[in-house]
Image (cartoon, rainbow, N blue to C red; front, side, top):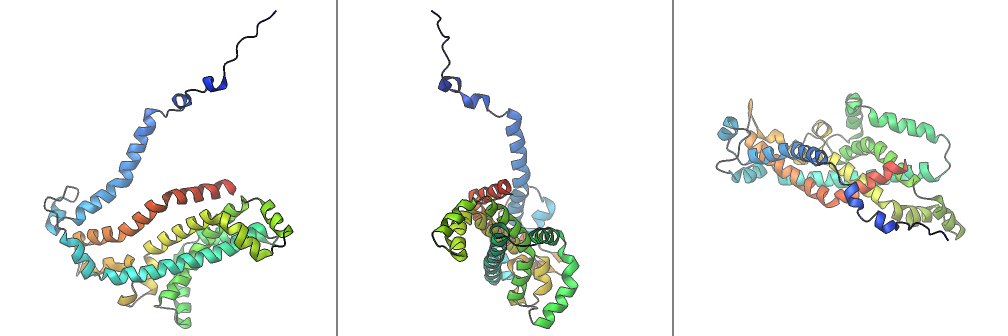
Length: 291
């Protein structure tokens, strides 16, 4: 009679999987260095916002010895940041909604419908998303002046639609490709039309991708400066990204107030990103895997 060798249970062999997968200490060291590299400029920026102009000039990297909290209120009132926030909110919401509609429609057509010439459209989107906007400033300026869109928030929002939609379309297309077509076929067998498939099948599954596109376009529109200062001339219509001009005094600038205004400007986007970072990373990852 032969006795079979006792086999090692699977749960015993894998009872300590975390030990074999423990990262090397150098991995944590690299993470700490990257964290300090990313957070260091923001910390210095906050310190500078609490200094006086003379202390900032004498010790730009040191701690604020006597915090000047009134810098924030001075920056808010001197730069009329309340109106800037309202204008930026209009621009950001308009850009975000428009980009989601345009990119969602294009991505659905390119990923779910049998369209001729979709390869050429893909190449066009890749090329258009890589061209610098400076190439189009002069013709766009004359065209917007003739159309009456110059110095209007709606005209600036249209430009942002054109700039941010190509990348958003490619991102959403990659996301929608990963959705199985079996869902569409099952819905069509039940009598659903194309709009029903779009709104009841594809959109509920692809909403992390739309959330990613909305966040990326909102951050881009909020931080954009060149087009805002070129196509908006009225002070009451200026977005928050152009408020730094208010601190220019002749040939000098008050860098303490500029730092305070920067901290005020940065706070909403940091809070928004921290709240949605998990959804943002999930959407980017899903789009990359599905491409």
